[in-house]
Length: 242
Ligand SMILES: NC(=O)c1ccc[n+]([C@@H]2O[C@H](COP(=O)([O-])OP(=O)(O)OC[C@H]3O[C@@H](n4cnc5c(N)ncnc54)[C@H](OP(=O)(O)O)[C@@H]3O)[C@@H](O)[C@H]2O)c1
Figure (cartoon, rainbow, N blue to C red):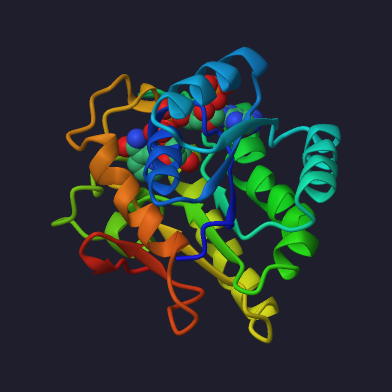
């Protein structure tokens, strides 16, 4: 394995992002741990270093263009390229609001991070990813973003009508498809993954999966070979319907 590969994980200071950093770090990848809060980023990096993982923080608020630009500049200056981008940062802001209670502002603020953040960071990092011989992008989506599963009464997602979050993940899947088409003549591969319902702060730790289980699909798609898929949507069981 090429041990010099550089990985940027947005929202890497906790939850699935942090565990992804841990798993990739254990495999020998060098971790750039994106964190919008410097202290939380440094604390997370300290934990990784205790496990002999090569890691450093990159200040990165995915909703802030200045922050994104300075992250690009930092990576450009220190490494000159980026091998793997994991668009992990995400928010779930609507709680149990019904459609009647949901305000446009909930959609706007959810999309700001979950959709526009993914678009902005991906676009900004593309020149660095193009300098890698095998760039990879993984977008953290969710089965809740699958329109097919949302319409299927037999699906575990059928009764979870959290419109802002679900539709933001549907939009992330759309970004995956369109970026994959745009990048089809390059070595870069981009895929969406569903980590499953995982116990993290995002859901008050109510998920039934561990971060260890959740991160494995992220790691899998981040480390696919050159003959691996692009423009797809995957979970532990394989392809997830759009
Ligand atoms: N948990 C699940 O069941 C589940 C299921 C499917 C998909 N996902 C997706 O998996 C991803 C990770 O979620 P998680 O469950 O690990 O949640 P989490 O524990 O709440 O972690 C979310 C991370 O995103 C960061 N973040 C939020 N807004 C940000 C911004 N504007 N800029 C930069 N970082 C930001 C948070 O930073 P702070 O610490 O500063 O808040 C935190 O590091 C999300 O995209 C989520 O939608 C989760």
